[in-house]
Image (tube, rainbow over all chains, first blue to last red; front, top):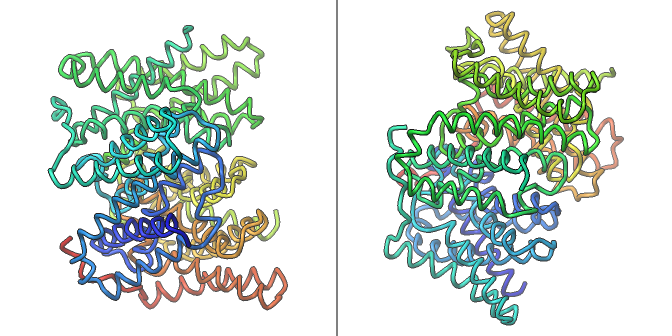
Length: 204
Length: 204
Length: 204
């Protein structure tokens, strides 16, 4: 297991925990919480792979189901403790998001699509899991209303594009792209930066 | 850009505006409104293309993302004015719906499926975008409850089938099919025609 | 039409009726109720087939659309009577679930995937239709909160796996797997057996 795998699993764990917690708050049972956690973790990549017409990544190795299982067991055993580590999870989640965006972009370019499709796929990989989670727990999708999230994925995509255009090495390009996603998320949450809301439609 | 393209973009614009407006009413931020607008415009065709196992149409050219961007900018700049043009949008929306149904039917027949699949795909192309929009903004899908909408797509499909069976020319078939969708919508909204609701299940 | 077909249609009918009833309780019109019924019946298998990259099963023969149509007409004509047969439907639904799980597992193995993917696909085939139904009617998915449902599909998958490992004949394996799903459902509903809910997340 190399460094990328480690980040991938940490990101999957953080995404799964967010799904398990929100599902449990709605009184979903253990299995329901597991399913919501899993969908949060793999929903974005699965949507991307369906659109790219390749086999969904989690069907090729059972590690994502196992990591989500570990997340559920952790939540059952250490529930109260986990809540105290909220900030730690935020960092995991941000790092996972950065990695998911880079993975989404690279898979799309490898499938032969142009850059603008890759940027959209990076955003889908990073944010669709959280959107499906919020639909399953019957809430308005959080990422559309608070703290720059989906836009952070697009910024990461543009940085990837810029680094590629400047012929930076792949590893520098990946780090710069993922880093810009993480930085955007940290700054947005820390300083409560949000995009404006369209006015004038309240009474429609 | 020929006439069909023009109608396609007008329909995309009208569908995107409906998503942007409803998302903004729920206090989604600009980017959230953009995403909901985009999904409203391309969600039906994307679902159809996934079912037909062909590359989703919007991944082949960036125009749908651009038209949705123009719709967002219009909504930001001319919000109050746009509301006044509600009726204009209804016509765009109805024309777009007619075109989407015809495009969905033709793509399905070209992929080698029988007519009854094409009629279902015409309906999916026309109505799934609006269904996903309503799910994202956490409302009961409008099209299942008011003014004949999904059924208008089916009527358009049956007219397409009838014209084909009578060996009408493709262009006549297309115009008759799209026209019957538009006419059904206009009559349903104008005279408040709705399908009945099943009785007796209220207390289940 | 052989025995398997008959069970398949009975299961489709029971799934469709559950969608039609819940949609009607939300005042969806006839066509909306039909669409929700259809999605309840075919949503799981369609998701499975998209993930397996095979043509969705209902696009190969119109019988699923027809059975759902018969379900709608039955609900319109015999609404009050149908409600009295609630327990009958529960048995149809449980039998349909058992069959859907077995069909999902076999299609997945035939597509060349390993057993753990097949078990997941069995669960997806059996439960995603009900999840989409609950999303469309804007309710928290029932199967995550009450009476062991998705887990019953997993149990059926494990029984299938066990019987295969012991080299039982295909027909015995199928019956044992479907039977374990049905038995789990009947016992769970009869004795109100539910999985526990994760504690300590209520105030998040």
